[in-house]
Length: 399
Image (cartoon, rainbow, N blue to C red; front, side, top):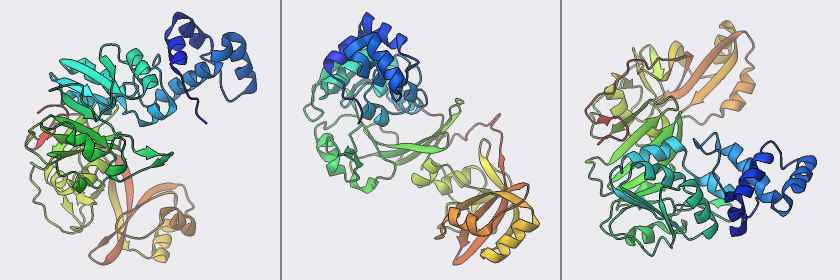
């Protein structure tokens, strides 16, 4: 069970004595009896709070930048937006007064306070609020229910909880606070609501724009926007830890052909796929589709900054001929990607029993009704010098 922090714990952790205790225990591990005993000897009854904070700070480094002195609860850290994702969302609200009505421990609030003319955070959880006061010291923080507005005209940011009794919930009515009630509480206000990428966005007809955001190839969140007047209905934003980022919208052209494979296969970033912008992405980069219902794209020149697949062989998908080809190519390290077919990649790999010294990627899909296998060599395409097209595309944060 995760440790349940109290207000007294937070007060101690924020004090000079607490900071000293955290420094003394920074190398201790709460899972070992010897380290727990050492922590109790050093800080007494606060040992559990100190050790939990040390552990959470260690976990946060993979997700949050500059969080080495932050305070968290386990659940709050799990739900917090990654720093680069929160920074992107904040950039779209730059210069505005912004109220984060479910601020939790302040991961979004920190980024909002950097660019907003005024940043306010509120939450019903008193412990998380005290942590937010520590983490987001440049913002104003007040205790308030998100369904009872305490600001008048500020843009509203919200991240409703999507877990109940430890399980993920999918119905917006089960969010905390419920999505429709949250929207109704702020009529006429700019609104930005974080939600899960797998959500059925048709249940939010009030949203002017749905944005899907990925970080380093993993789709991290969807954001429902209202009132920004962006002029687009769907947006995909692709972020990388190396600082490269770009945005594609449904304002860009999507007229592309469907024809036989070129030299390369391209699997678009998940944000592109989830936002329904596969054809727009293809048109931007001179690609085309193998099948209008399948998200794999093909072309003779892969897009910069992507991992693309140079086609070595194409054949109808049947296990025996595919296995024979892989043995002929001496493939031992095998990646299998599947789209549009009911195939378990792990089970197929076990049946194929690849042995050899070469590495290959097999892409399984269908063209029309025919299952097809592409044996490919995966390559990382350099992004140096890449500049996205202007029409329908902008650098993240610019409007």
